[in-house]
Amino acid sequence: MQARIVMLVDLDYFYAQCEERRNPSLKDKPVVVCVYSGRTEDSGAVSTANYVARKYGVNSGIPILLAKKKLKGIDAVFLPVDKEFYREISDKIMEILRSHADRFEQVGIDEAYMDVTQRTKGNYQGAKELAATIKNDVLTQQQLSCSIGVGPNKLVAKIAADIQKPDGLTLVKPEEVESFLSPLHVRRLVGVGKKTEKKLETLGARTVGQLARFDVQKLIEVFGRKMGTYFHNASVGIDEEPVQERSEPESLSRISTLKEDTRDLAVILNEAYKLCNEVHSKLLQRGLVYRSVSIYVVAGDLSGHSRSKTFENPTSDLETFKKTVKELFEKFLSESDVEARRVGVKVSNLNKKEELQKQITNFFGFSNH
DNA sequence: GTATGCTTTCGGC
DNA sequence: TTACGGCCGAAAGCATAC
Image 1: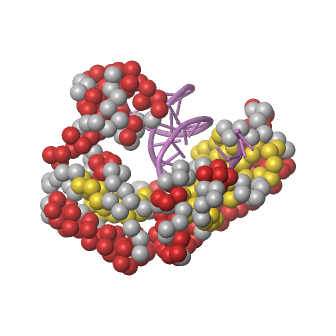
Image 2: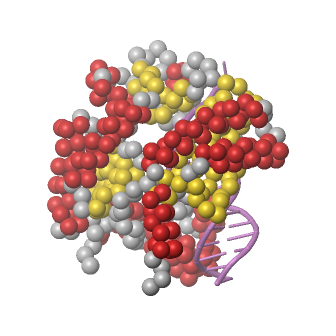
Image 3: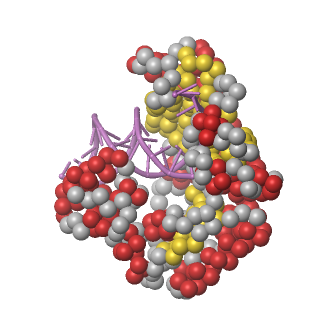
């Protein structure tokens, strides 16, 4: 059993960089890729901005109108998201990355983990050269830059990739892991959210280094065996999570913004059913069945609310989906007095249809041995 | 007590 | 002065099971 070498490849400011590639004259201007909600002209939020725009404080998630204010008087370009175009580019780049990996795991549209232990023979100089080759291949074949983190596992590779970007390459060798992680805030560890951060702070652990000095037993007392052990391991850079193909998504959802805020069930369902149709057609395309249905409401004050229901048995039925969505919105409206600004629907607990049938067949047909 | 499953909320991109 | 998406998986809280 050899020590692993894992890479995390992150495509830089992905949507905006795709737009720069399509129209290179944008390159020296602020480029702001926006999700327009359609409620009013320019209502919506910024999805991604290039680094020229970021210098002006234009970051992901801010309102489009705020971005325009920050860029007032500047020769900036605002574009709507073109997800299909980005998806095409992503697919081609992921193919390149996959060809350089022993094992490959795509995470979202612009990130992937690669296990490169075998082909680098566990050698970090080899890994550095491979990473440089990958960056060069992506640049010459698809004209996009990326940032790569290299380390002994996914946890370290992911954090390393964040150290230098855009166009970064950061290696953290096993003997460097401790000094690399020590000064970082505990919040950077996967599994540490706001509440856990608070709890750890109370215990006196703000940084990963401070967490590492805690007795495992103490952590187990506070967080339970599973999480306590996990936190201890993470704090000293131990992470055994394998790089694994992610074949299917865990959930499929659609959300959209209403013309105006409302509590009118008919208006809400009219929109929600359209979303159901779209989610359902994606389900069929992928040959998936669902076991849970959720609805989502963003209120006028932008607070989020949801309701969900899980069935005993999986189904792919559209009418069941819509009926459940209706029940959940009725439930939500009776329990809450907020007005809906955006409404969404989601299916989760997904499974491949054929595999389900295989399981049933196996169970009923071939289990008598 | 700890694990597991379900529901709701949070937060990254 | 305010302004505000869409999608995903992770986190957190709770109930129940072992």
